[in-house]
Length: 546
Image (cartoon, rainbow, N blue to C red; front, side, top):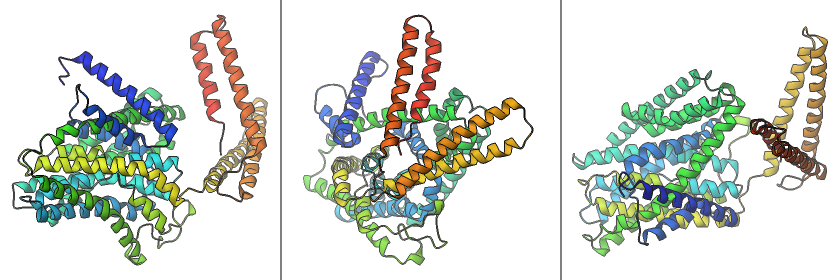
């Protein structure tokens, strides 16, 4: 489709796509199915109909789509949790990706007529990195345990850098002397190290701009620029741009409570949620539309060759992951590669010890390896001089469809069947203990202020604030007592607490209606209404639910 000569068609196409994205989100919320899989199915169905299709531009995806999506995922992750599970994350995002690429490469060379090891490794690198969007969406809705969410997140953040580096080495070997494992490892180490340095540099530059980040609009502008700045810096230095984006995002998110205002954080979070929603929706629609683009170029291949190539690729992707997880679980703890193994130094962050994954968690994690847009973008970057490029693109597309639709649609039933659920009671206890500690710190600070020099007006303000905080602390402690007495994993419901929340919402709604009457009668301007509405909106968000 020509973007220049058909601007109105493009606008209509994008509007129609957004209608589909919104509709599929509604269906996903009603059914519990992942929106990513539903959108991919819609994209495939659309590709069968007459009308314009948009071809996937790999450079556009890698430059304008992947950086913001990775950055947003990093902002939603925990640097401490990932560091706590670093051995596990590295095992999945580096070693497993490398093993997948090599096994697909060897399989291609052995069983696909005319295929080379370098070309096979390039395909293996493209199909190796899971895209965790579908698995995370289902996992959060199904209340997967926190350690499982962290592993899926951490793997998805770091595996793209590994895959793209291996892909670059494999492609450069096509016209050379062949694929070299030591060369691949050496280039990955250099690329990854440089990406980390680039990400840290960008994060500290953003930190230096903290005086600008107090303004919500400036904070949003800086936040939107950051992933592209990190990616471009990494690419200019010929190191991993995607790893630079991830590292920058993790550090900035970790520092956000100290270096940005509350208003800026609220607005930035809302902006990135919208960006995620739009980009992910359009990307998964785009994946489904590539069906004919990859099928139409298979005429030169025999059916048997296509079947063998697809079987090798899909087989390695589906079988190696659970095998890898099971084998790493059997390794001795002293080798420090056991997934979820106990930290030899004792308790980890937040006072919790790491525990080895049980059999149910291994099964769930094995089925969380859905592939996505990074796989297609990577394989579509292959040039015409790469042997069997069209066959490789078809194999990658099949892997994406099989995992995204097959695993994506069955992940939720599997999680329910396994009975894997986070202990909501523990999570509620942790949050309420933290709330109590924060309020107690505020009360301690008020006691210090009482002993400082101040006038009678300040004294009255201190007493008023102290009473409010004392009431709040008492509420949290009663909530904790109720949680401690609970016999199940579910958060106990206090009739008094729920009644207080219901009354609070009714009171806020009554205030909102009265403000509207004032506006409609001309007693209050629209600007005044917006200011007061924001106050009520923030008050409404403060209604604790656990």
